[in-house]
Image 1 (cartoon, rainbow, N blue to C red):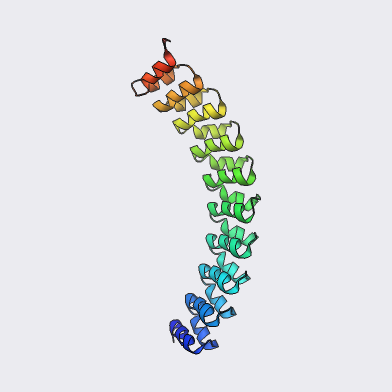
Image 2: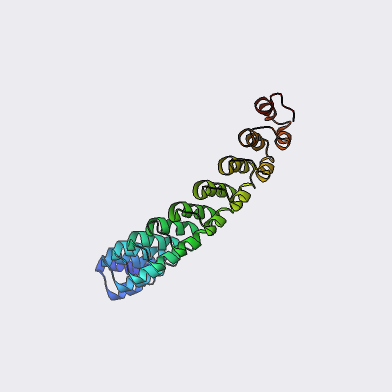
Length: 251
């Protein structure tokens, strides 16, 4: 008798140790047996569904209606299942579910935000630092302050480095500036919004793009410079540069 056949037999004749044992050779059939035939929990069906982290989570919700060491351990084999188990079943943080969720930086952040209730934790912070966006969000909403590790992680992405400086550091730093300078537009924005003054390095980076050079000249230098003029010359920004910055001045 196959698991499906045992299930069908039990549908007609009711639950028995024999049909349950056969049904439990297939985790999905075991779950259906628990829900439709037993209409309740049983150690055998729970043990069978725990071969699947998804079914373990579903069993905990639908059949046990509570957490259980076996289903939790099975759920922790997958970072998503561990996170959802902590959120929906345990409804509280635990070291094992946190550790499992932290196999993925984005779910580590979600765990910190939703399960740990925005309380920083060494495990979640270390995990989020493997992803620039997660590190930035962690610094902004969980730590709510700058740190070398989250800054370093955010600076792997130029835009996030700029946002880190603007939203978290609230002041310039060599690391965020260097990262922002990899993108001409961000170098210009960094000079205007973060440094709030011109610098050779941000000007040089901005001048790799005509638009950024024009922006830098207008909002940061607030006067024409050889570097910005050469960057906009023979581009669609040349006339704007002349009209708004040169106005009779000699370059």
